[in-house]
Image (tube, rainbow, N blue to C red; front, top):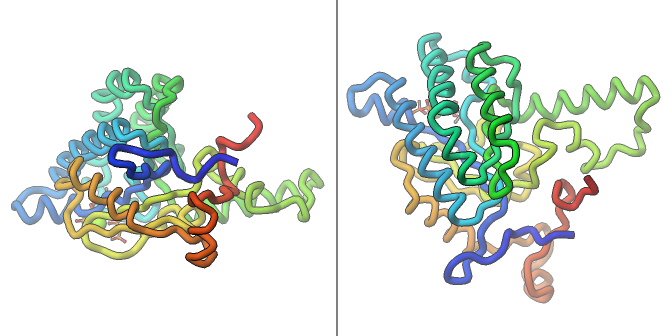
Length: 267
Ligand code: IPE
Ligand code: IPE
Ligand code: MG
């Protein structure tokens, strides 16, 4: 079983293996400057670039970004369209750098819900970066955490009815394999910008034991320094996973069985 952490960074700090970010606050950032919300999203894309670069440099293996939720389809049409266009721009502008830096792009959620041009741009990006082995950058697009759980349950029910799955074989690992997050390990550190202290339907199953960090700053103001601060906070936590502090310290390193660890699975 692989350790829960990716290893040690500079100054002996532990680098979380899987960092997930709820990138909130683009709209308020823009409105505070008298700009259109869409301009906040464009500025947010710049912050994405910096977060990706920093994560790669730090040795984070999995970075998952909440870019568009299932609920976000309810926003005004022009805002949704601006976000869909920005995704195309991001895919086109970043493809070379992402590949060059060994970053593989992955998607969770319902890619098929996106407008054709956006879907194609994202699919092309996934294909273009498929050999990246330094970091997996997962974009949550038309993503809903509850929906992902319910879809997994439904697909198992269908297969059980057909006699292809035995109910007694369904455990947490098997269940997770049916989800769109099947190739991702558990979240170690979940960050939300924008000042709200809620998870807004993000990675409900996968964040069961994540450390949560909420920042008052708006997403476009998120910098490399902020990410480092979050990792410092993470390093100050004792991850007990239900055990006592004495048990955890007695065992030396905090090594946790990762039920959903794709790195442990036979390929
Ligand atoms: C970005 O922040 C999140 C996305 C849905 C793309 P918001 O657009 O939610 O910004 P606020 O929360 O309204 O400020
Ligand atoms: C969460 O932000 C979704 C993304 C960051 C993509 P929202 O702005 O949609 O969440 P709520 O509405 O504040 O819960
Ligand atoms: Mg918001």
